[in-house]
Amino acid sequence: MLKTEDTIANWYLYYMGPTIDLLIVFADSTESQISSQIQNYRENKQNIVIEHDGIPEADYMVTEFAGLTSDTWDLKSVFSEYYPNLHRRSAILTIVGIFEHELVNLCTKCFEEFDLQESLKDTRGKGLEGAVKYLSKIVKVEMHKSTQTWQTVLKIVKLRNALIHQDGKVIDHAGNEISAIIEHCRAVDSLSIDENNQLVLREGYLHFVLDTYRKYIELVNRSLIAKKT
Image 1 (tube, rainbow, N blue to C red):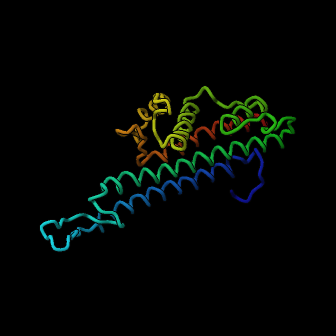
Image 2 (cartoon, rainbow, N blue to C red):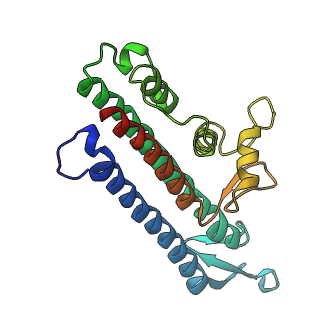
C-alpha cells in the first residue's frame, strides 16, 4: 500500500497497519453516505396527488422520492433500513475480501523470505482458512486459533458467506439455522435478524469487524516477528 520495502519484518508497521487505517476511512465514508441518504430522503420527500381524469373522488395523495411512491413502496423502510443495510453488506464483502487477500499474499512472502519448499498453491490451500493452515503447518508460526479473536473472525467469515450465497439469511438452503451466525448476532449489538431471517447490519458493525481483524493481524504479526528473531 505504501512505498516501502515489502518484507515480513515491516508487514504490519508499514503495510497492514496503514491498510487498516484506510479501511477505517472507507467505513466512515460508508456511514457518512448512509446518513446523507437518509437525511436527503427526510428533507426532500414530497406529497403528490395521483389524479384520475374525470373521477376527482378517486384522486389520492402519495409520498414520492427518487421516483418511488408510497402506494407501491414503504419509503421509510427503503431509505432508512433497506438501503443502509445494502451499503453495509457491500462494505463487509470488500473488507473481508481484502483481509483474506492479504493473508494469502503473506503466505507468498513467507514462502519467498523463508526459502520454503512448499507454497500455498502446492498445498492447494484456498481462502482464509487455507492461508492460516499454511502459515501454521508450513511456515510454522503461531496463528492463535484458540483465541476468542480468531473465533470471531470465523463468525465474520460465515456471515460474509451468508451474504454472498444465501441473500444474508441465517438459515441454510435446507432450512437449518446457522448457529455460528446466530450466536454472533446475539453477541454484537450492531447486528440483528429480521422477521424474514435476514441479517440486518447496523451502524458500528463495520468498525467492529475492522477492530477484530486488527487484533488478529497484530497477533499474527507478533508470531512473525518472533520467528524472524
